[in-house]
Length: 296
Image (cartoon, rainbow, N blue to C red; front, side, top):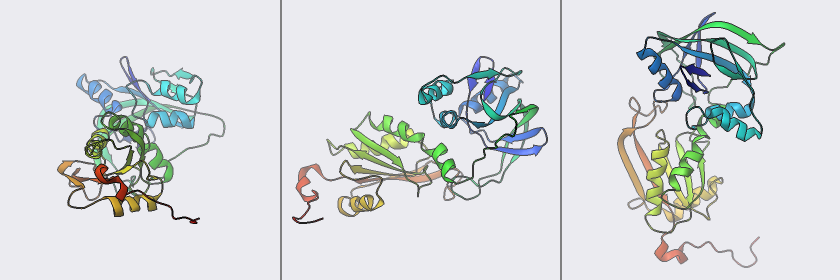
């Protein structure tokens, strides 16, 4: 949790221990905490922070979700169906109930952060990141330390799954979207499957564009019809096998911003691919899946 002047934020950040009262924090440019940090830096000031370890899982999910600024605790309350009690620390930061709380400030100092294993299971880059100076530690009796295993299921869920509603919302502006999934094989981050109820031949291409707009780290987008089960890899392969033609249904986006977490990117630049695996509307009868009499 962080606070600068009248702005607050709740987010999940990777921290590297530098000493008994110093941490290096990975702050992704453009995210809310980084915005607060830059605003403070421009004034030669520090950002008040609190590292809350072992919070309510719904608070953790809300802090991982791309909601409007300062709305994380409101979202957590909506998920819980009840209010989230917050406590003000000496530095002004509001924190929810937690097993361990580390109070401090993001300073103007920077230090090397990493290397760490990230969501792909490979090494992330070493970067110069802001240093947090800790001033106080509080904890419950016999606290439970909750840590995230890099590239584990919990890491992927918290980092990737919150993008699904963003993709859904953006695609819904241009097509009749039914469902969205970030695939586990794509690290729940790089590969999206979008299920639509196709009404025009342009719907799939528009859905691809919208998905990439919603999540800039996406690398590959697959669009399928509403009769394809997006949670069944065999059904997705069936759509590719029977409804996609390579010279007509693949869209390339060369030399665009991707993610530095992708080992195949060049300093975050990559080529993105969209695949239209939907049936052609002018000959739907060819793509209709039929069940023979007596089958099953």
